[in-house]
Image (cartoon, rainbow, N blue to C red; front, top):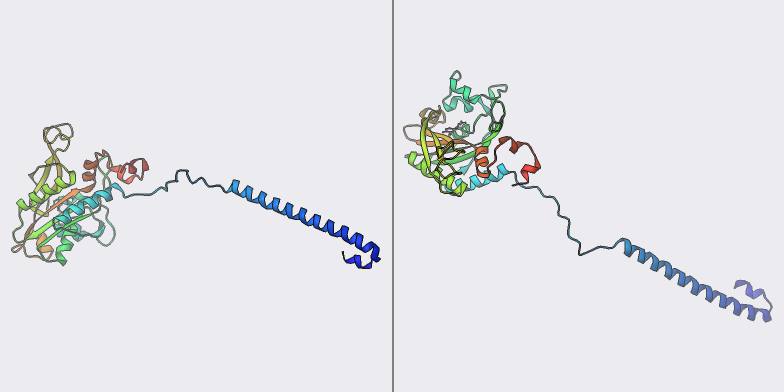
Length: 297
Ligand code: DAH
């Protein structure tokens, strides 16, 4: 177009006209092609980036509370409703709190019942949650009502009903005239609410160094409702826990005067409680981390 100027006038008009026509022709063609390319890109993107809004959503896999935690919360809820506080104590315990303070002197054969893992400096892995009762009474004046649920350890071979590591529930109620009748009422009510079935309990004399008198507590068999079946060896009763009236020496070791205060304590295997609730036949399942088991809760 620029060189048109140099042409003689007669040619300039003719060639100029033709050049303009070519220019316009090319512009239209370019625009058309550009439009085609744009549309092609758009179409390809639509095919590739297509979202099916009617497709079902993908559910993210969520975890949930371990069955022992669920049972722990349920237990705490029931006792809290009856005025009990939930307290905790250390899993690494001193020999004093685990044994001596609970009226189990160093050479006493009762220590054999609670064989554990001994650490340095007179420390042990606690064999029961009962030491928490002493720790609590040292710091709090009666009247008091507490429960504690926690991990305990035993030096023993594992099988379907024994683990080296398991959980216990301990309870304690102390006051001026707290008695065995109160104990029966509270425990029977706990089992009734926990198992959501009417139950009866019975007390049988038993020995624990930290209580006097001591008892074993049985509950109506949940399977046959007391009629007698294979679960309860035809007796209609299931052994549930140890309990008793707090021994005067335990009060003294906790800094309380046994002349003024009396109360009861109980302790039980917490895993066993969960096993009965859900009809689980092997304690080791709780600690296996097997999702086929855990996903059932
Ligand atoms: N600590 C006992 C055990 O591990 C259970 C127990 C029995 C706890 C009687 C108590 C109790 O508080 O009063 O076998």
